[in-house]
Image 1 (tube, rainbow, N blue to C red):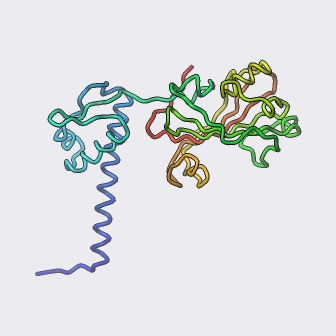
Image 2 (cartoon, one colour):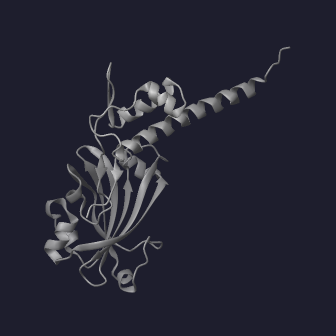
Image 3 (spheres, rainbow, N blue to C red):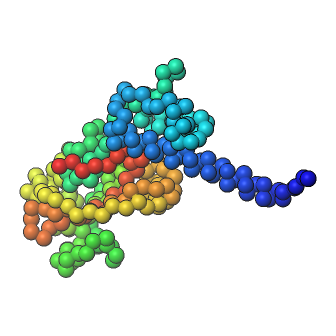
Amino acid sequence: MFYTINLSIQVKIINIVVQMKKHQYQTIYEALKTQIQAGKFQEGQLLPSENELCSQFQTTRMTIRQALSELVNEGYIIRKHGKGSIVKTQIRRLGLLTFKGFSEVVEGAKTILIQEPKQGNWANSFFFELTEKEQKLGCIMLKRLRLKESELLMLEHTFIPANFSKLLTEQLIEGSLFRSLKSWYDLEMISLEQSIRAIETPADIAKTLQIKKGKPIIYIERKYITNKDNVFIYSALYCHTDKYALFSEG
């Protein structure tokens, strides 16, 4: 006895199978990446063979190869014919969760000022609660693009109380906001409060970071506590760091 299946149902079944396979290789890729970042596989060490990974994850060699290709693209492994998949680096980390300056914690750091400091009012729905004094003063705003070597990593919007007016007339010392505030006003960052979450990249941020609109990125809201009473610096950071693990240093 023969049965026929409606063409639209056949297409749906095929699409479901494709999505399942796609999800599976991504799951394997994430699992292996996590193991590498956690130090289970050291630099120069071989990952398990394709056959061993097939057995471990109960899948096909094609799916395993897709997952390994993602690790190659992300710079976690290199593949050598006749030898296997070799861990390229134990972990690629960025100390972006610290209150220290970007250039202090990121080797090869570069900063591009894409909006010169300008004075204005705080947004009506600012991401931290402001004191009455801060609201009356207004703020100085600037936008900086952060790079590691030539790789775009982060867009940072920073808000400083408007009484630090040298920011409007002087060039930042060596491009560093923290260094400039320390030199001009003896103002230092001593700690911070921050909230971190994943968001879909807004269109304007995606354009600046040269990534696809809607791609998941890390969004950080920060309030820097300084050595001056009731003086705070605020930042909103859009971090495109899927090639790195974020950590706090110091």
